[in-house]
Length: 563
Image 1 (cartoon, rainbow, N blue to C red):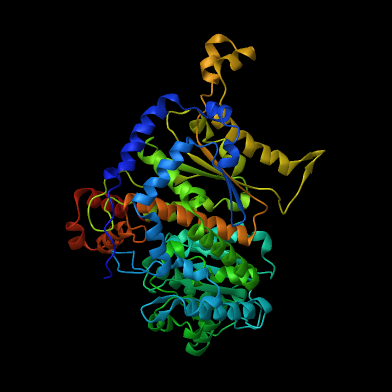
Image 2: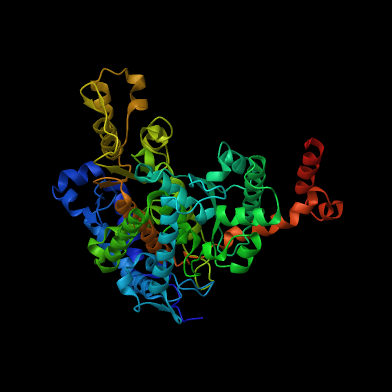
C-alpha cells in the first residue's frame, strides 16, 4: 500500500478553536438581515461562476471572518494536497488500496500518457472503452443492430443497483428532452420481483435490449434480476414464435438482446452474453462515481455519443475549476466547508436539495448515495475513530411539490436544515397561462422561498396585516434559515455534468476535513452477507434454529402466511 498521510485531527488545529469562539459570538449576534444591511457588497463577494453554474452563497450563515477561518482550516488539514493526490492517482482509498480516479473518466483523449495507475494508461483506456461504447450505441440507434427477428431496438432495460442504477436513472430523467432516436430506457434495481414485472410490462421482447450492469457480475440483486429478465425475454419470444426454444436459437436470442457492463468476461460469457458486447471499467472508479463510465451505456444509446460527450465536458470543466481555483474563490471548496460549519458547529443533521426543475426529480436520491455512502463513516482513513460528527442526511423533492409538503419544517420547525435550491433560466417547454409566463411563476417560487427562509417575517409585520394577537406567533417566520442558490442557463448535458461533479467534490472536501475515506462503503456489506445466510432459513429448520429470536419469529410469520 502507498504511504498516505494520516488524517489530521481537525479538532486539534488552531483554527478549530478559533471557529468555536467565532461560532459562540455569531450564534447570538448574527442575522442575515443585519449581514445584508451592513454589507452592500455581500452578494457580490459570495457569488461565484463555475463551469456554467452561478452559485450564490450570500444567504448562508457566514461572514468574511467565517469564510477566512474555514479556508484556513482547509489549509491546515491539507485539503489542497489531498485533492492534488487524488487527481494524480495516489491510492487515497486506503481500505481498498485503490486510486480514486473518477476524474479520469472525463479527461480528454489528448491527456493519454499523462496519468497512470501502475502500468495502466488510465485516460487511454477510458477512451478505448468510450469509443467501443459509442460504436455499439450508434449501431443500436441507427437500427444496424437488431433483435432476432430483425426489428430495431425500441427499449433498453438497464439492470443494476446502487451506483449502477441511481446515476443512469437520474441522468436519463434529467435529459429526457434530448432523447432523439425513438429509444426509451427503463431501469431495474430492486430485487423485489415487482420491479422486473413492472419494468417489462408492455414491452415487445423483439425490440428490447437488456443491459446487465455489474462490475464483478456477481451482485446478488443484479444477477437475480438479470436471470428473471432473461427468462421473461426467452419465454415471450417463444410465445410470439420468434424463436423455437432450441439451444441454438436461445443462445442467439441472448446474444442479440443482452449486453453487459462488467469486467468478468468468464461469467458474462457463461450467462450467454457475447463478450464483444461487454464494456468494462476499473477498480479506481467507485460505483457511485461511475455514471460517466460504461455504467452510462444506456444513456449513450438513448441520447447519442454527442450528448454523452457534452456531459463529460461538463464534468471535466468542474474538475478543472476545483483543481485550479484558489480556495478563497473556490465555490466547490466553500460549499463543502460551509456544510462542515453547519454539521460541526450549528449541529445540523440533514441537508435538503431542492431542484426547481421536474427533470431533476431523481437528483436528491442520487445525492443520497453519493454523500451518505461516502461520508457516513465513524472510522478515519487510518483506522482510528473520527473525532467529530460526520456526514449529513441528504433529502429533497422537486420544485413546488416540496413547498406543499415538508417546507413547513424548514421554515418554522426546530431543526436547522441548510438547503440547496437549484434552478434554470430557460425551459424546454415554455408555457403561458393567459398573460402569465408559467416558468417565471415557477422561478418566482424558487426566489421567494430562499428570501423567506433568509429574512422571515416579524411579529410587527404580521400584526400590520390585521392578524389577531393570539395568532401572531403562529404566523411569525424567524428567518436566518440558510440556503445556497444554484442557477444555470438551462438544464443540458454540460450543466448536468458540472452539477454532478460539483457535489462529488463537495463530498471530497467534507470527507477530508472529517478524515474519512470517502471512497469505500463497508457499511453495505454486513447486511448482504447476512441475507445470504438467512435465505435458506425460510425452508430449512436447521438454518432457522441458528437465527436470533426476532428473525425466527418473523420467518415463522412468513411461513404461516405465505400463499
